[in-house]
Structure formats: structure tokens, C-alpha cells
Image 1 (tube, one colour):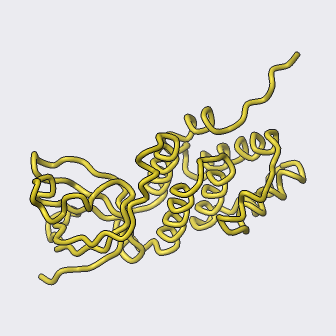
Image 2 (image 1 turned 90 degrees about the vertical axis):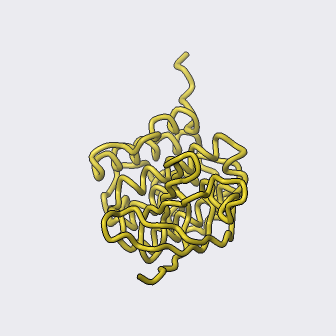
Image 3 (image 1 turned 135 degrees about the horizontal axis):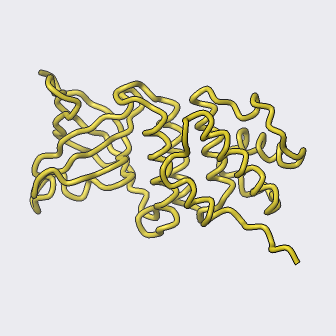
Length: 223
């Protein structure tokens, strides 16, 4: 059987044996797939240091005929996104993105635009402190990619909040910092998105409620 080649982001890692790992990837052409990295935990393994959360790599694998767990052969590392593993706040947002994608997609189904969007968001998180608006923008864009348009849902938002929603969908990632939504607009957009995501997916992805508590500004207590 011939080797296959793909470019992917590592979504999850878990030990299989004392020396081997299971690596879950997100790729554009092959979607989500899992590989066994045999011997990757050995000190002299050629894979050592190349396999970690949110690493971007080109890799080769042998497809299994009996299961969805394929055999990883080689990996060439392209990007590590180091800030995601040094900052728990960044890591929590990135992990939530994984939970969202896994909940909304099937394995081994092409996901070119989802891959591109997740790659762009990870790059933004790697370079900028985690803030509410980029997180909400990522959700809005991902929902659009899955066919769930927040704009088409005609949300009953205040005009200013609706403008923030539209700009969060359209502006380049680097330009999001030019938006200055009020704390009230962020709270309103967050409430809408939580309800909209739960409606479309059946429930919120794991970790979303925690992010609301940590990143969304709270209303001032009534006097």
C-alpha cells in the first residue's frame, strides 16, 4: 500500500503505549483523521519534538484497512504556535475550537475552509492576547462555514451590536482590534451566540460556558 501525504494541525494527543502516541489531525483534504505514532515517545525517535498540540506539520501515513487508526510514518514540522502552550487562557480558547470542530464535523471528510479558518485563528491567538471579540468572530465564521448564518437568522440585536457582528465576520483578523465594542455589546453578542450555537448543534461544545465566565465582561451590579 502506498504512503499518503497531508498537511495537518494536531488537535489531540494521547498515549497508546509507553512508547507510542495516538495523534488526531485536522487536514484540509482528508478532514479529521487519527494516526498511531509508533515509538514517538522514545528519546531517539525521529518524531520526537515534532508532535505536540497545535503543531502544523506535513506528514505521511499508511492507511489502515481495518480501522480509522492509521500509521504515521514521517512528519516535517512547519509551525509550533508556542504561545498557546505557555498561556492557559490561549490554550483554553484553542481547545474550545477543537471541541467545536469535533462536535460539528465527521471524520475523514474534506474540510478545506474549516482547516484554513482554524489555522488563521490559531495564528491570531499565538500572536495576540486572548480577547472576547476574536473568539466570537471565530464562532461566527465557523458557523457560516457549516451553513448556519447568524446574519440570516435575523437576530434581535441592538443596531450597534449587529454592526459589530457583521464586522466580526468581514474584517481581517488583524483588523479586529480596531473595533471597540462596549462591554454591553459583547455580552449581548455572547448571549445570542450561545443560544444560536446550542440551537444548531443541540448543545454547546465542551468548554464554552467556562469561556463565557472567564472572557465575557460581566454587567455591573445594580446599585
